Length: 298
Image (cartoon, rainbow, N blue to C red):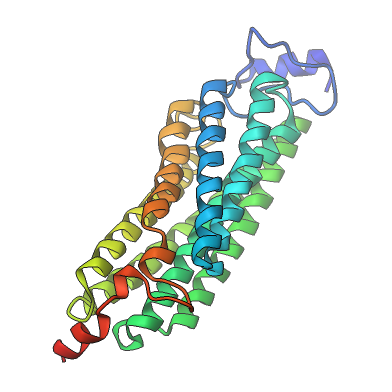
């Protein structure tokens, strides 16, 4: 769009950084789609924390050979790509549509990897503690919720890409926002059902598990709620509408998107399933003396 058309579009609403003139190129939107110029402090903190977490999880992955937890490492790599792109927005061009779309894609999709890891470890826990304690079989639980997350993510990414395109071309982004909202709503509902299944399993197996397993389950529940809080925030942000309060103040992004994911990945550094559930080659701390407790509870 021309400079005159962009001035008119900005006058109708949207954030323009007075200290950061819009580059005169086709890849820049007329306004900053974020609703603010991303903070380099938030970006730098995210990069530092996720690099540390990536090193720790990679070490634990190979130490315990818990290959089922690979999605966490993939998710951390995706977070890093997302925050690198967000850093480029902050320092190079906050109007760039491609920087916005890349950071949105990777930061939105990364938590799906963490969710998949949680689904997997709960499936493994059900297998090792007893299928009779869960409302569904472990494989059924795994595939139902992974497929649900994949569908929700595809819809969200499609909606986000369409929003970026709409802003870039000066079109109404309402319909793409509704598509994004539908994907988020589906994800919130499916994740809530998973939490019910998780709580059901932990409660039903309470007399057949050790104290250490219960501690691990509690830690996993905290991480699960953290990821769920982030999903609820994204739903509320999208439902409120584009360029509204939640989407145009970075403090909400920092506290309700960035922080919950940090909590989730760091919880699993100490309460790593390799240590507490174990692998095929070894028994984890949470399942030591499991048979004795299981027999005495019958």
